[in-house]
Image 1 (cartoon, rainbow, N blue to C red):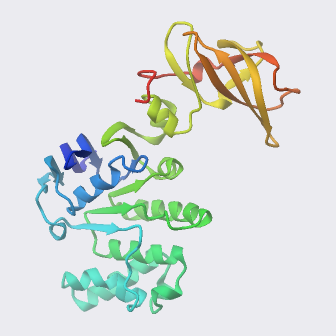
Image 2 (tube, rainbow, N blue to C red; image 1 turned 90 degrees about the horizontal axis):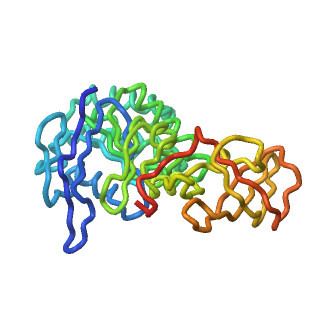
Image 3 (tube, helix red, strand yellow; image 1 turned 90 degrees about the vertical axis):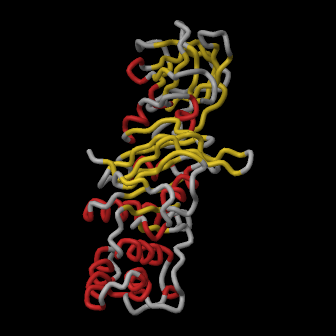
Length: 331
């Protein structure tokens, strides 16, 4: 698989603060890569450096094999969609989409064709004469996307593009962006703090913390085998304990069972609380792990008999879904 862009030892410092700390990353051609992590982890700073809006303190950024570290944004051939969409309110939808083409002095006939084709791609051909204020949030987002795609960018960069939409529209637009990427073969880099968004949309998921890459890989690979406590926590793992052999592990609630009728790692536990959720019961327990530490465990139990707070039970962890972690700390 060819590489569309790469970070080699890239660091970005602002005074005494290190926003990005010596990262190495290859962005695959024709795929959708997400930079995922909490606020302040360095994902947006990394995107801005790739776009050319910020230059690294040290390290190299290449785009299609060419050192682009010091190239200005307009020389990089990239399209970008911001969180705010940044549409021109006095222009029609078609004029907004054509703006980047006019700046690049593309001929009128080709501009009109590209605008029409791109608006059809995002399903807005019927709204080409409308002004942005007449559009819904989802439609405005599609116009911003069309404007970025129309210039036929070498890479398309998306900075939290769905964060201003309501939950229903976010789900719709995830599928829409994925469809457009698949149909066009564009290389897309998406910044998000939403793990569901990253899991659903990514070919490559890059999880960051404190300016460093904690783990990267295909979503299924990262989700099923988190490398450390931070990654597991961020992706929704809730159970952490040391087993009898001294290995620090995590397991998701659905792979814990109550009672001693199954094989696996067993811990004696006390029920703290229960939460009935219709098809299942979420049971919070306290247990002492293999290191002698009191740990909180959450089991997602189906077809459970009556379980009451204070009840003593055995928690069994399915060995096929126990994940060893690098350490017992947050990283």
